[in-house]
Image: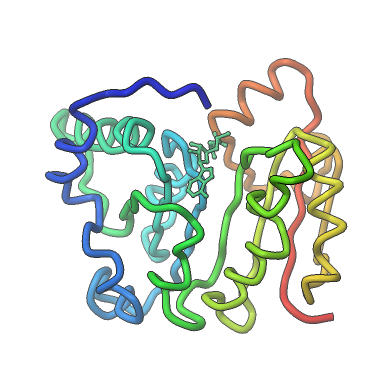
Length: 221
Ligand code: SAM
């Protein structure tokens, strides 16, 4: 994603009620203190402008959502969109918060078993071999997810990048996970496409004719 430095990003994010600022204090307290309920917690790592997670939060008020994005200039778009909608009389979402952090910090922010589902959508491919550990589906990242996911928790990953998808499939077993479902063409897979919510990148790349790959994985054999 090309980034422009938007000086007011930090200021808007600092003031927004949708952003959790003292995120390390929230560890172990997401349901009880942050959301104030016992509903499941689903997170999206690398949410970009946030359309996917915002749409899910509107459609599923009984699920708690946390959108994670490391760049303020990108998170700004998600925050401003929600706040603009609210100003125009839209609903105030009580089941959605954002975090401006690097996903490497996840185990410092969520306690053991505190997250029920992790979404990864169109994650950066990091094509150079020496950067493989930075891919959000690498075994290093799967190890981080392992620390925060509930026992029956799952990771759902979508991408149009076949190289990244093949790499991700190959990481599953060595990392101690198993494949629950996968497709190389989500939009033509009758079963897996049910309930699919498109992301910004998904819309753009599928409009260009790129097939979308998806996998769902869980821990253990
Ligand atoms: N998920 C969105 C979509 O499908 O439209 C955005 C995809 S965009 C290619 C990937 C996003 O992930 C970027 O906004 C990037 O800043 C963010 N990202 C990449 N690595 C990250 C990390 N380690 N921690 C948090 N965000 C990350």
